[in-house]
Amino acid sequence: MPVSVARVQRVAESVLRAERVRDALVSVTFVSDRKMASLNWSHLQHRGPTDVISFGFAPVTTGAPLTGDIYIAPGVARRNALAHGAGIREELLRLVVHGMLHVIGYDHPVDGERYASPMWKRQERLLRGALVSA
Image 1 (cartoon, helix red, strand yellow):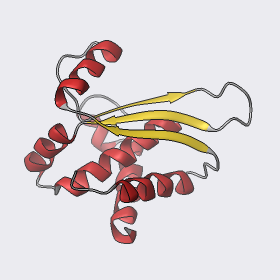
Image 2 (cartoon, rainbow, N blue to C red):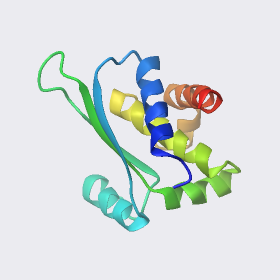
Image 3 (cartoon, rainbow, N blue to C red):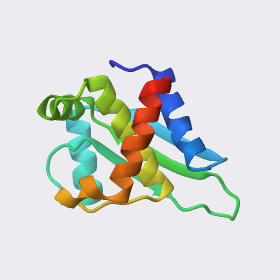
């Protein structure tokens, strides 16, 4: 992995702080393209691997911590980074931020409008901050 576990944790925690989430239990797992394709099909009925899938779980009780799982496919991230002229580390951290925002409750359109969405703009601001401080 071209990014350390500690850096992934710092970026995830920075998103939680920025969003004023005080209590959270979120896992970030890096998976193969094959595993991501399986997750993508079984949960979203989409064929092939995607770069990130996240699941936010509703709290069982009021005051319970935010909980969620984020799955990232570094192989897809690498291809996307090359296609968009970004570095692989930057793209992986972008996916951490993206997944965290989904777990927190943000969403975006699935078409080309996603890049103009409030979530995407928030993601890029948080990513810039994370890249400067990390």
